[in-house]
Length: 256
Image (cartoon, rainbow, N blue to C red; front, side, top):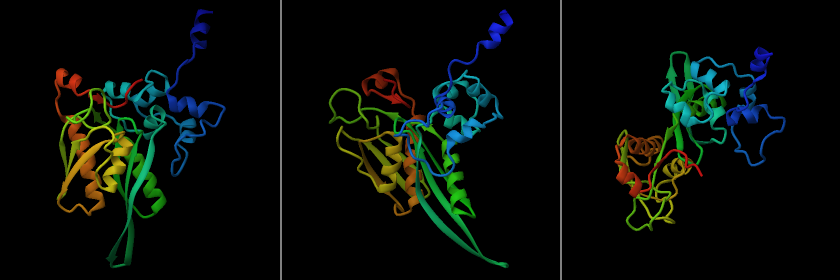
């Protein structure tokens, strides 16, 4: 009886994405609209191939933060879909590349895509392929595997006391010849940056920032990647507990 009792003791908790995938309802009506195949449908038939994936499937890991704490690399996109089903994607650019070969004209597509939950996590990827639809899906999946936690805080001297949706300090990102400097802004200032940088920051959950750019800023790919690199540099900066508390710095999601 005791053995049966242990066998009957099934997983009472599932990762958010797995719970949505296996629930009888279709999910909330305001769920983010995604391109390509439905991630929830893929989770229903998912068979984990890595140790981390099996831990997520067994209910041992319920949040993305817990997955990062294990130290295991995230190599399956289903892990991200299971732990962060609220991710939204944004295709920043689709460029056609033509090459002349001995066999004739060869056409490929270059896709730049960003994903984020609007609350402290963002990913960016660029992929190449022969077809637009499959290349977009490949870029989305790769961006999910490139997710990084974003430092947010109240780094502007003009802001009132308390947490803000800006960045804690000035930081510069680089990609090729393009340099983008992000500067903390007071609450309500908005995103004073180019369109592609604005879209990356919006997915990251940053709503107030000033910026300065130099180099070939008309390059869509380099401008977006320089903005993403600036957010990466924020995460690499060592911050003392006193500064972290004074600037109200949070990393990743803000738990209410």
